[in-house]
Amino acid sequence: MARRLLQLYTGLVLYGVSTAMFVRANLGADPWNVFHLGVARIFSLNIGMVMIVVGALVLLLWIPLRQKPGLGTISNVIVLGLAADAALALMPPLESLAARSILLLAAILVNAIATGMYIGAGFGSGPRDGLMTGINARTGWSVRSVRTAIELTVLLAGWLMGGTFGVGTVLYALAIGPLIQLCLPWFRIHIQREKKLVEPTIVP
Image (tube, rainbow, N blue to C red; front, side):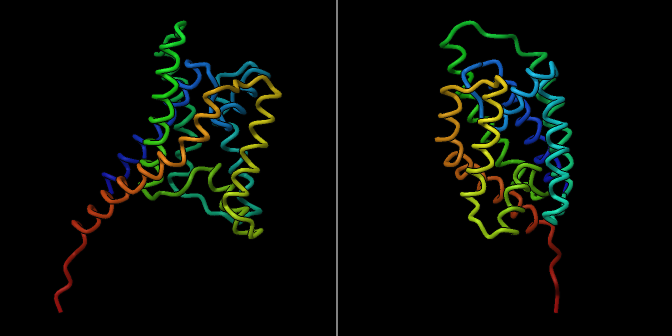
């Protein structure tokens, strides 16, 4: 259990750090962060605060969808935003395009690792992922269709509000699926091993 909790919170902190990396790279972010950046621009708020508020509002949408939050869900709402703001405070803006490009690529990789860690910990999905699976369960629409519809909606809304859309957004869309597919089994294997180690032996 302790190892799973460590993995959960390490993953959430790293996800927040990856958000800060996207912001400092300033070459485009994933759809939800384009939305967060747009809202932050409109209301003159820190992106971390926006992430917390949006996460909480999305969580309210779970009620009609009859989704049940877990520890990972609630932690996701709080930790991501705090970690993003803390990382931004420590991470200076970059001027060089080469440095920003490297930071962008690193952000995508860190984001994938972080996602694998917090999902692999098995404490429940984040509010945004739960929205997707909840709509899928209630409507019967495919997960791919629901996710695409949600992300296109928040991407368009974020772009209209001035969120940073760019090459990073396209690279993220192309790379994140395969990268998470590589990362997730690795973290799940470690958890399964831990469970086997602590599982009591039943003597007949």
